[in-house]
Image (cartoon, rainbow, N blue to C red; front, side, top):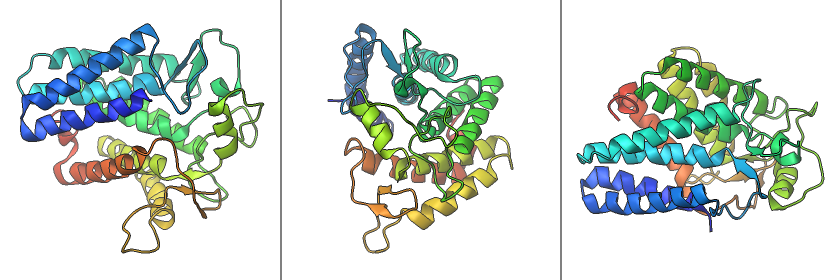
Length: 300
């Protein structure tokens, strides 16, 4: 039972409300959203299959809530619901937490922080793809608010994350890295399923960070023409050489590959991740290219 799944449902209901202009979908989205925020506030939120130890906080929590609040605000505004101001304020607060609590001085993003500040495998590791995805949420929110400083900071974090996470020997974005290690390989004794996952799968190449990086780099380049074109081309070349199923009649990407790019018969995380990330980012890229930057920011 993971609240991330709830977030995906809220995003879907918000989009459906905008497409159909039916209030009932927004009502359902808001009900779920309020329940999630309540559980986050009182510390009862669940994030299986990889729960965090007590007194730890994940970057993914304010990250997904930022995106959810953004889409709720867009839906509420389209339907003439004054709550769009509340949702926008929530999105601004979540954006601030991402940038102020989780972005490190070196421009990378801590995926997990702990209240006691004691270093561990969880608090040392970085998930480059998650950071890149998070930054396009931040860029869109900051662009709507006219906050150029945050837009520029997020673009730098995005580029730094791609640089640190890129496998210069075999191509592609590492799933996890430890920037404190000379070879970026996370090391340590696993104290739970999350740490075991980091150690076991750090050098795999999975589809969703690459699809997120494709859109993030394209968005960044729309804001600063030429600044992120090489990043987009780098990811595009690797992704479309590696992930599409060789059988074109299947029309799907193969989720997981080893470090050298060979397919692995594995499942990543929740089953909802498979149809979500790739479709979303391909559609967003089409929208951005066809309708311009305003379609994702001021006119979103």
